[in-house]
Length: 82
Image (cartoon, rainbow, N blue to C red):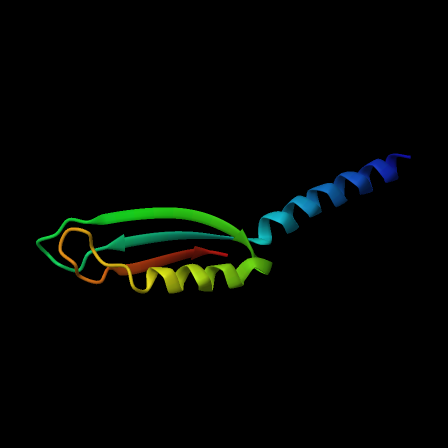
């Protein structure tokens, strides 16, 4: 009985590790390359590894974003925690 309790505790902690490892955390910083403009925004998100296609769709949307103040194409910096 004690062995069963020990094994069930181990498997639940192992499942938590798997869930945490299945997530990819992303930090996005969007800023204007124009030195006279101070536009800068940052976002954080996380998603499962199985949803990697959603990231590519989001990046395609960011590709054509322009600064609302000066009209320059915005720089996109990505930071991943895998």
